[in-house]
Length: 298
Image: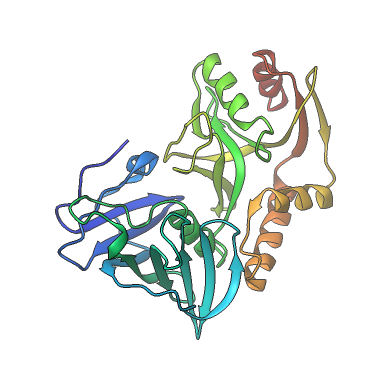
């Protein structure tokens, strides 16, 4: 899915009630949102994050102290109070194809695309995954919320069910089973944002979907939380709060290089487990699990 190219030189999208304003400060840089991110475009919203994008000439010189290497395409550096993400690809070489510098609160940044690697006649999405997700994860860690590996959905009675698990744990399977049952809105089959609003924990859909390719910008209060486990029959086991927090941490996207972010995330999950039941759901991959889970909320 693609949104049309930006004629105004700006794109605004919102995920988890956080709004990002992406501005092209280079008249030669034409932008478009790609993939499911197009569902999250908004208008008229005040931005929480401002990012300026332009073409540039990057170098292979490290831009600061290395804080984290993903082992994939991106690395994170620290220079004075700023955080700098670099993105490299074996097909491009030693020079990064993209570099983004953000202030310490991740509310403002500058992004440069290495001009030699792109066809400048074609529109691009400067915040292309995983940068858009990395930006939100780091902003959330500053006291705003947490992103988790989960399928989140709203049932026909308006209740929010959160199913957590790592890759292959059954999140996309669960999303499909509920969709087939009807009357359900799936917020995401892979990544969900959690935030505390008005003394309730809300979950929000994200554009970073799984293999079922399900994404929605909607939100709903969380009624039930389950960790998924494949089994031959359906069953539920309650988790002690300490175990629940540890397993939530293992399924979360936490900037482990940020002590403050870690402390906030632990406290957030402790608060959440005090108000919402957290259980392990063993499930057989057929339609019976849908009604089984519905019964637990009644």
